[in-house]
Structure formats: C-alpha cells, structure tokens
Amino acid sequence: METAYLLTEEDIRTGRHFSDGAFYGGWYMDNHPAGGMHDTKEENCVQIPVNVYQIPLGCLYQNRVPNLLFAGRNIGTQRQAFVSSRVMNTCALAGQAAGELACTMVCTGKYPGQLEREDIQQIQRKLLCGDMFIPGTDIADPEDLSSQAKTFASSSHDGFWGKPQGKMPITEGSFLTFPGLEGKQLKLMVEAERPCTMHGTWHISSLPNRFCLGQEAGRWQAEIAPGRNELSLPVPTGGGNRFCTLALEACEGVAILCVEPEREGFLCGHKDSPVYLEPMLAYPEETPLYKPEQVLEFPNRPWNAPNQWKAAREDRKPWLELHWQKSIPIRQIQLFLDPSLNEELPSSRAKCWQESHHFVPRTAMPQSLIRNAAVLALGEDGVWKEIGHLRDNCQRLVVLKLPEPVVTLAIRLQVEQTWGGAPAVYHIGVYSENNG
Image (cartoon, rainbow, N blue to C red; front, side):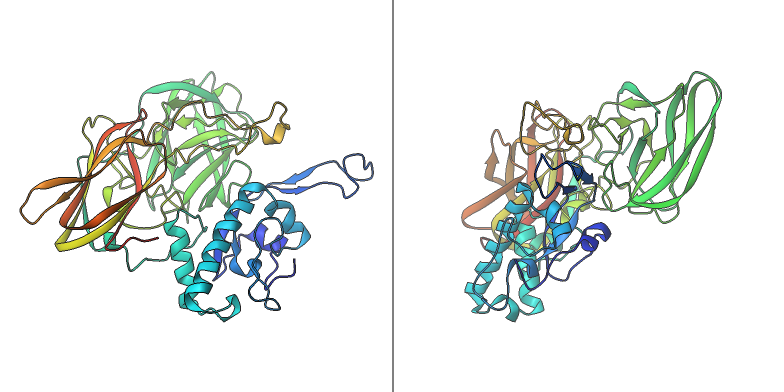
C-alpha cells in the first residue's frame, strides 16, 4: 500500500530510528521466488538475518484517504522490506499501533498527517505503557509517579555466576555475550586439553542476536595453558553501557565452562543453534547491573543493558519498595516482569521445521517470573496494607487497577513465589488515574 512513508530495505539493515517509530520487526528478509515453490529459476528460500528495527506510524496511513488506517501485511513497505515485515508477529504489532493511532485521532479530532510532535509522543507513551517494544525509543511518561520515587530492596543480585553446569566447546561460530561496563574487566573460565591461542572479534550493539552480533570493535586473543584457565576479558572500547559480544574462532580442545542460567544478558552459544548457555563469566566485583533503581526507568526490557532489578539468589523473602517524600494518591500500578527474555520465543509449532527456523520449545514457565506476590501500600499512619495480590501469575505485564484512590507514602512488592528462580522486575509504573 502507498502510505505516507514506505519502509525500505535500508531502514531495516541500518536499524533506522524514526521520530514516529511505533512498533518493530525482526524476522529475516525472507525471499521466496515469485513463481512459487516450483519456480526453478530462483532459489526457493533466501533468508538474510536482520536485527530488530523500528516501523513508523507513517506506514499505517495515507493522506489521500486520511481516515483510513492499515495494519498487518498491507502496511506501507517496499518489496525488500515487506519480505521481513509480513510475518504474523509483526502484523499483530501493527494492529496495536494502528489502534492507538485511531484512539488519538478520535480524542484529538485530527487526521494522522495533522498530528503534532506532542501527539505522536503521547501515542508512543501509550504503546510503551502497553508493553510495546520500540527499539531505541525512551520517552519519559510525566504521568508515571515512579520517576519521583526512591527504591529500596531486600537484596540485589551481585552479578556473579552461580552453580557450575557443563561446558561449551569452542567451535566455528561460537560466541559469548555480556553487558558492558566502561573501563571494567571480566574474568572468564575456560578449560583446555593442550596449550593453544584463542582468537576472537569484538562486537558491540544495543541488542545482539546470534546472526547479527553488532558493530565490530577490534580483535582479541589469549594464550591458554592445559587445564582450567582464568582469563581476563576487558570491555572493548566503546562497549561501555552496551552489550558486548565476542565472536570466537574455532579452538580445538578448548571449552567455555558454564553455569546454571540466571543472569539476564550473560549468554554463550553458536550462531547455528537456538540453544543458549550461561558462561562462567563475571565482573570480579559487585556490579550495578541488577540494582533496584533500574525499575524507575524505561526501557522495560533489555536494551544496551539488562535494565532490571533482580534479587539475590539466596534471598528467601525478596521485596522491592518505592518511596515518595510525601503522600500521593494512586489508582493503578503496572508491573513489567521477566518472562526470560534471554530466550528465543517461537510463535508457532510444526511437525516439520526448516533448519534455520529451529527454536527450543519452552517446556516450563520462566523461572524468574513472579508467580505469587502481595502488593502493599504504606499509609500515613505507618501501617502497610495489602491493596492487591498476584496468584498463579503467568503474565509479563500485570496491571493492578484500584477501585478507589489509595493515599500512600510507599508501595511494596512482596514476592512470595516465582516459577523457580530469583525474581526479576523491569519496571513499576504508578499512576494517580487509571491509565487505559
């Protein structure tokens, strides 16, 4: 469809940011022959990996028929962009963005082409509040009272690795990823059968994937002795406060030691496998990666950093509190929880899978997702009172709408049970009115 803006292949490949970015895509540029599966003149399927990319509101409308919106496969794209944006997950996100755009049109009495910058930012805020991912967009919500709060927690994860669990041989296509902290060094544990030299190439990115590791940032090498080795791994130049990935060259007889998975952002694997492990890799001192103040800000998911509070693994009664200097009335609380965003999530099931489509099926609930919890408010009388409860929760976004305003100095999320691991929270939104 010819819309106000047509998404291009270059937009996808470069991860272009738009002032009216509204949702995202991330599927391969997935080309199929125009003549169908029996066309022998072209390859049956050519898949070019891409990273997540923005799609703007301009792809959802045209100015000739200003009250007509598009969503799904008919949004405005050039052909080489369409081969990525056409998949059902992206189509569904287009529908969410179109719905928010339509609501704004009704509320403002404006057509899309008449919307001003403030109107577009309000649409983006509403989408983010509804758990939309707009890569690289970080717009503060002035109605979210959490930005005025201070955080306290029963504990925070120190960022160090947990219990040992297996190893990963270093073959061609192996990589490891971690959140970068400027000027810091990490220690990595490897095991070798014989003396050798490890080689690799650094990459940095806001959100790497196993096919698109990010911008190259130099070379790395280390001498390895037989047996167990503790290697010093410097954060590459420019890698501070972004994800760093080391693409490793094959090194026969050498393996990265691994641990039980629990830390967001620490991964190792192979570019041709959907199986991810957690490397025995950590900063030697306690880091701020999982501190409670993370929940006051957007983005509410991994982007440049883990962006979450995570309780210490030994904390048996974890809690997280937001405190204000003076009493505030609240009507709605939003909890953005962790459904294990480290893992790939297949959107369908099939008996036959193309090799490049392989995903690891999820056979259990995400361990860090909060299952049962109480939400309490601190009254001016100094007494905590329960205002909500989570029971057998299986959602990432939990919205607690209160029947009447509650005047409070603080709120507490008292975690009673997760689905297996230490609890993690990305963001807590607090509103004086019901926010949609």
